[in-house]
Image (tube, rainbow, N blue to C red):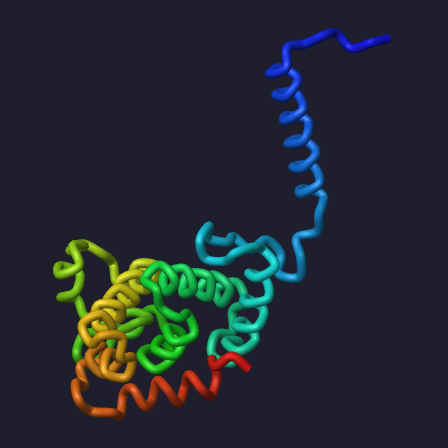
Length: 190
């Protein structure tokens, strides 16, 4: 028996719905991978495979400093997203965080800088977010990456000088040298 003749648009719509149903069923049945469900930011990774490879590598490196696997994965994802959003290398941002706060989201410096990237409270007003909570991880990463991008733009892409300005040690090499040492010891692509 022949199927009833449907207009072309209806047949295409029915075909599209059938393909969508098959794809979602296959996706739901697929195994979630070794990391379980990884909530990937839309722009953070080109595909799921790249996300799992990067997260596995960075998570292993970070496990020495951050014991909680769940927190570690969320932190890495948020760092990558915030860094790429500002056109920064995520591994440099990880090195800055290690030097600034040793991955303590509630760190407070003697000068009053707060959070993972040790953002000074005056930056909230300058960046148009006067009520931002600097102890909130995503907010701190977003503002810290924006500040680092500001200094990179101001110093025409010179990372060494931008890092010195970020830390407030303008002209002195001790802070950029420390970030570079940490970067090459733990975060450099091997």
